[in-house]
Length: 616
Image (cartoon, rainbow, N blue to C red; front, side, top):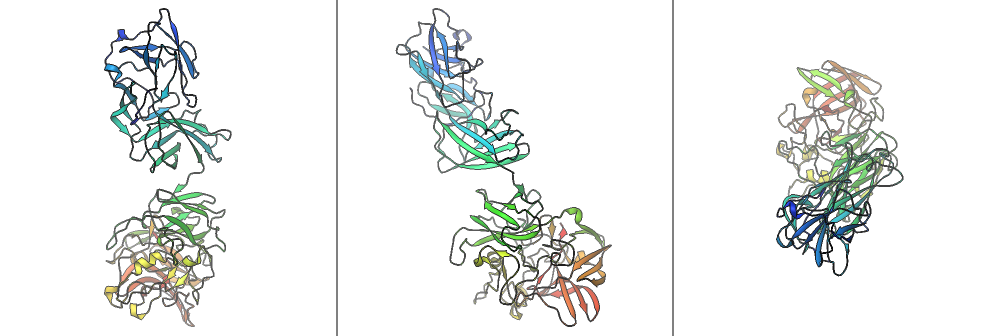
């Protein structure tokens, strides 16, 4: 059998593309016939079909031979003129033209295949004086895909499967030399091949897998990735297979299992917080993007290169109460499954995957708040304030309800930071009694960052590495967790996107979920008529009445929840506006029996306060 060097190919059909023969050179041999037997490879799906003849090449003449016996089998017989003796070349399916001395046979290998097409190209040679039996070989490789389901989608049909190589041609137009087996790509290069199922062949069942024989070019892909996408209607499953050295005339079995596809949380955008509202459901988000990924004043996001992922903490007493499992895909997506019940908060972090004594899971590169809650835009409260309309969330960021109880308080944030703290903060001694932590080395703490003695400020980088650390502050930093000095140049007014005191814009450090952001001062303008009742404040905001739980705040020097005083309690809701060394917050206060709503309260940036998000 001749040697073969194959450079490219995958096809849905075989057609002629090189001309050198006339019609009268194509014969059906009928005089004093002898029998030629041709066998296809036993491990490959192709059988002899009535509409695909055998091409026979002898003395620079080409003949088209129809099957005599053996249709729909692996071995077929053909009738030959007994005068044909000596060396012959055959190919299947029949190709009608050839070049001089059996060179440059034209074969087109499209990148669309189906079960009804003759996707492979077989060829062989034989000396008829020795034998009239020929075993032909496939010029290409076959991926034998077996696609099963864990129960999801059974009864429905897969529509297609697409195989994509990593910078290697899998389809195109070629010249084939039957004498040497050499194949050369001449045009139409494609790095992917799509196999389309019929309604019958793609039907998912519990009895047997859906099969697809995808023919690909014999190509060296060791050390590279072969990506396989399976589609059923609008749903897509993606698998990454380690590439091999795919050789001609060989079959490579690949088993794939599909299940419920993950809901893509990035369909509506990117953020540091994602709302999930379905139990026992698989979700995913792109962990290569910092926050919303947008460039804003003084802030330019960087691409993340995550290597591992874990759940940092959950608000439930035991792990698994919010997130059952979490994984990192090869393309940098975090996938996770929700628990049996909706209602809770969690933090997922990705790391560089390099273990150290301080960080056994690697250094945290970024983290995301997962807010398990039943909430939709229809729950928003539309407020008209001085000609502007703001859509407020009807509950605090991280809250599990709207009542002013433990579930309605929500989470706390230091101004300008993206990661939350529990409503009751960090207790004296640095302990947190709420929820559960996956790894104590990444657990709750206070003052994990101390500025360098040389005055260098790495507090922002440290806040990313230590998302569970409440950064303490004092008069030396104007009570700001960010910066090393007390002067105005040590402040960063860009963190929440409103350095100029306007309506502002969302930044990569904004803690609100997709489609929402921290409100500016303008959204609260005109707040009036506060009433304090049942641990909550009811106020008029613009043309609406809104209720805010009395959530207090976390003290900047300790992270402890402020207990108030004998004269009353103070409760704060952040805005994006800054003022000198401080920032502006909505202050709701009871003092000596009176109730106040103050929007000109200049608050310390190191405090931990609540957030009521508005729609972007």
